[in-house]
Amino acid sequence: MNRHPVDQLADVRAEIKLLREREQQLRAEILRTGDMIGDDNEATLTEMATERVDLELMKQELGMITVRPYLRKQMVARLQLRPASKPRTGRIT
Image (cartoon, rainbow, N blue to C red; front, side, top):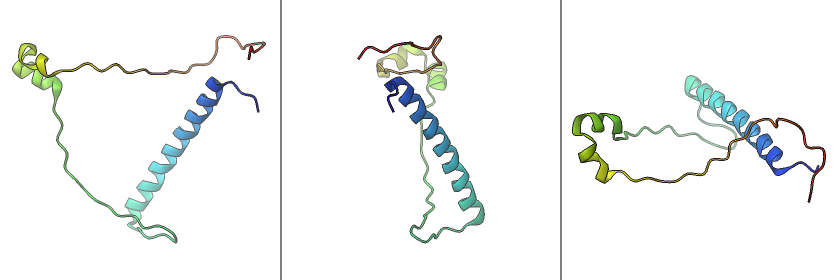
C-alpha cells in the first residue's frame, strides 16, 4: 500500500487509541476479579505515593517574583493531524 506518511500516522494513532481503550478494559477486569494469573503472564499490583508541586497554588501563595527563577521553558514540537480539506490528486515523489 502506498499511503502518505501523514495518513499512516493517523492510522497508527487510531490503532493506539483502540489499544489503550482495550488496555483499560482489561486492567479494570483484572482489578475487579482479582484474577492475576494467566497462562503465560502474572500481574502484580503495587501502590506508590507520589508528590507533585501544585504550580498554580505556588504562584498564588508565593507570587511570581518568588516562583519565576525556578521555572524553565521547554519547547515541544507537536504534530497534530486533521482531515485534509481536499484530497490530493497527485503525489510528487
